[in-house]
Each structure stands twice: as C-alpha cells, then as structure tokens.
Length: 582
Image (cartoon, rainbow, N blue to C red; front, side, top):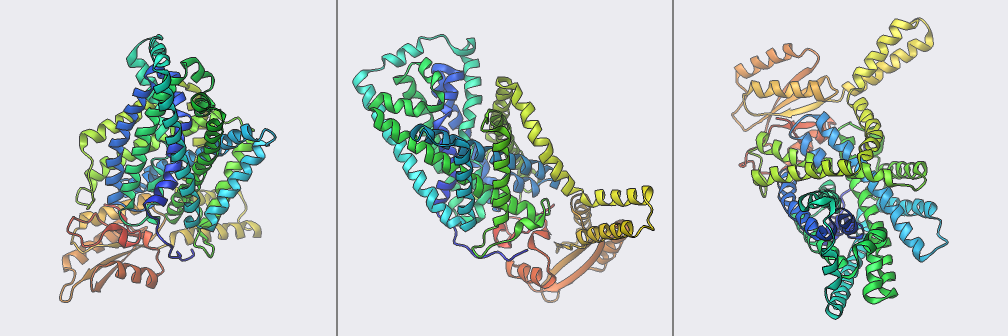
C-alpha cells in the first residue's frame, strides 16, 4: 500500500458543492415526480421530505461527529456491529453511486441533445464519465473547483427561474393554481396522495449521504455545515419549484413534460432564453452529480479496501495522492452498465431508489447502535430518540411506497444487488473458501501430479499471506471479559491468526499477575489465534500509534481499541483510523 500524500482539506463551499450538486440536481425531476403521485398537493409532500431531512441532519451529525472517517453508513456499522453488516451497507452505497453516475450522465447528455440535436447520447455519456474520472484522478482539489462553478451556476439559475415565475404570477394571478386544486385528488384520498407523493419525493434527498463518504477530506467543523446547507437548498427549492409549477402550468402539462419540467416552466414564464438557460443548467448540475459519485465512491472504496473487503491493488496512488485505480474501475463498471442497457436506464432507477433509501435506513440503525454500544464516545451533537425513530420509520415508509408504486424495481434491484453482495461475501470468507478448494484438490485429484502439487502449495501460500496480517488491540484495563469479546470479534470478522495485545503504562505501572495469567487462559481458548502480549512505557497518543504502526508494519486500520469515554483526550479522527470493536 502506498503512503497517503498530505492533501489540502476542503472548505465549506467546496464540500457543499461536491455533495450539493447531487442533491440539488433533484430539482430537475422530483417536482414532476411528486405531481405525478400527489397532484396539487405535491409541494406539501416535498415540505414533509424537508422535515425528514432536518431529522437526518442530527443523525448524520452525531454518527460522523463521533466517527469522523470516510465510509458513511459502512463506517457507522463497522464501528458498532459486525463487518458483515457493514459490508451490506457498503454494497448498497456502491450500487447507489453506480446508478447515480450512469443515470445523471445519461440525463445530462439527453438535455444537451435538446441544444445540440446531432449529439450521439451514448458516446457523449461515456465521454462525460471519462472527463470526471480524469478530474478525480488529478485530485479532489481540482474536482472541487469544477463543482463550485457548477453549484453556484445552478443556484443562480434556480433563483432566476423562481423570480421570473413570481413576476409571472403577479401579472397573471393564481387562476391556474386554483384550477389545479379543483381537480380530483390523486389515489382517491388526500392521505394516500401524500403517502405516494412523499415516497416519490424522497428521491429528492439522494446525495445527502455523499458528504459522509469524504469527510476526511474536509476541514474540521465543515461536515455539519454541509448538512445544513444541503438541507436549506432542498427544503427551499424543491417545494417552491413544485408550487410554482402548479401555479403556472396545468397538471396535465406537468405530467406530459415531466422530463423537462423546469425548461417548460422557463419558457412559460419568460420565453425561450430562460428555457435555454435552464437546459444548460441541467447539463451542468447533472454532470456535477456524476462528479459527486466519483468522489464519494473513491472515499468509500478506499476505506473498505483498507479493511480487506476489496482487493488491495485498488489502493495504489499516483503522484497527486489519488487512488486512481478506483476511479478507473468505477468508470469501467458505469460504461458496461450503460452499454448493457443501451441507454434505457429506467430499470436502473429502481436500483437507485431502493439502494439509496436502504442506505439512509441503515445509517439510522447505525445511530441507534452508536447510542447503545458506544454511549460514552464523545460527539459534537446528539439526535433525540423520538426524532431518530421517526426518521427511520419515514425512510422505511418511503421504501415501501416506492416498491408499491413500481414492484418491478425490486426484481431489478436484486439482479444487481445479489452479484455485488456475493463478491463481498467471497472476500469476507476467502480463507474458508480457499481451504475448501484445498480439500477438493486432495479429495478428487492426484496430489502426486506436479502441477496439482504446485497449485496446492500456491493456495496454501495465499492463505498464509492473508492470515499472517497481524492485528493490534490496545488495552490498559484488566478486563478479561472485554478481551474475550475482542478475540471473538477477530475470529468472526477478520482473516488473521496473529494478535498483539498492547498495554501502554506510565512509569511504575505494569500489568497484574492475575491479568497475565488470564491471558494465558485466553490463549489456550483460542488456539487458532497466536496472542502476543506487549507492555510498553509512555502515553497512548496519536504519535505513539503511528510510531508502532511503522515499527511493526501494521496499518492503523488494523489496530483496535474499546470505546473511549468522554474524558479521552483525543478526538477519534486524530488516531488515524483506529477501529472501535467493543
């Protein structure tokens, strides 16, 4: 693994722009979606979504504030439950990013085709994906500059469109809005209209999780500001655009022009120039959502690869410090999906919907586990139990609503999800699978054959290489029960047979005889794990962790601690990626 190059951290505007382009691009389609299912009450459904997102601000703030490392829902679950459960969240997040990148890139080029009719959409989509792959390879700092330009232009376009729509209403009155409100309620009853409208409108907050996936690239204190800024943009513009659309266009026109609603609105309230501007904005901000996917997936994949869930070759860095192989592999996956679907991406929308909402629900569950299992871990803010449960219930409600609206989406989702989670499960259980392969070779084939013997030895070497990775657990307490939990966790979640248990004492302190005796008992209880106990003098500091990591050649993310109390003198992010396992 290559050393991480020190890179400049991102400020509030850059971080908000990277994640905000994804979530704010929802203005282009979510109003029309809400109108399709909630009719004249679409703007109310979108306001409810804003309330739910407000609850998630606290949830994300507490979890990422306590565990400020890349990975989002994966990181939250990795430090509060098993590696398998965390891998489920990682798989769903990867699917969400993949679908976001392909859909956004394709939609951006479809909008551009309205401006340039001769444009070959598929080739242009591949070109756009390659551009953002290149930007991420160059470095996140350069990517952020592009994101800032797109984000500011998008906000300016929305403000301009809303202003001219307001002037149009002042001149023409609310007759169209009144006519729309006189129409029969969708789905036969207001509660059902709001339920399905809310379910569809929840897609308007996709991208909210992105900031958590590159939090390590942000300056201190920036992350909660990105959550606030994204919430403000979504809560103001999504309901406002829906209300203005219902005030200037009949519902029938909104439904028949759902893919280009804002462009049609611009033409209605001010003419072709505003329609053209909105189309240009759509191309740019959807392109920005592609960039968000590349940045987010780079942070997530780097994290899960460090934890040996994906192959380590992905971690190689270029001179700019970027893990360029992650960007290249992600680009190739996106292009393959685009070519397989031939640009007909409606099915991918189902993957996108279910994966995104599942990740949001898992993040809420991660917050519950954090409260229960890591209650003493310091955090800058806390979500209330009632708001947490309401937020999770709201996401599950939206998930059920979307499946009811589009039952086929669940089938398509499983077609993508099953291979993804299968790959992850293979990586998590690769030593067991390799041992099974050895038994099959022994049973079915002649071990005298030179080629087979060579294969047999080669597989053994792979197993030995995987298991030879040492892990470290830092402890100072004479708590044998806690050490037993550590060994159980390592046996069930990690591929290793070597563990260093390290105590760092001040001068004059040392481990008790009873503790050392208990360690010998544990060593006998877990014969498959070689336990080495080390006593050191000094202080447990970030510098000491780094020093031991370099001395023993053990990556910091293979070093564990128990959950620290609020008296612990260092923020968790200063420990360099040490994991919490009890």
